Length: 206
Image (cartoon, rainbow, N blue to C red; front, side, top):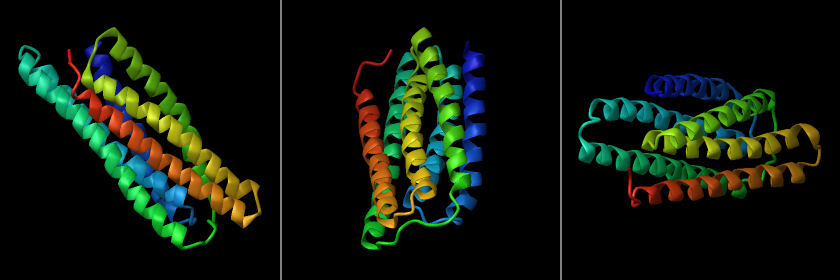
């Protein structure tokens, strides 16, 4: 089971790294705030995955040291929650800037939309996978990854709605409203999820 968990973490990093790479091009292909927010969000989450893999390997090596394991668990929750909240702050700053600059998003959003759809599928799979691992045997890394991937699914849905509006609607005011609301929903959800994960560090950890 432990080997399977580590392999899943490695697969998570591999698939998650593809998103920011492709979206870097997509960001320059359109002016959607939601698109930029999605790129930054995926980049930040990739760093959390890398830290999670490192933490998991560390915890496996010190399995006979309960106090040290507890410390690593607390740091896993702290890092995961803090990174999500930091990304929310960055996106909020971008949102405020773009609310002042009332230009409707334009450009090609096909790539970004495709990544969001694929992301929803893969993130759904990994969310269920990590949730299963954590139910079988409680583990801070599996728990935080399960919650992060649940957050990724919600954000992907918002991104799909926002970017689809640019293709489906011609009313620039409607597109502008959907794009801003989409970004705001990402910000709010990241704050919420980050705060919830931070609270877990104060709970008894097994």
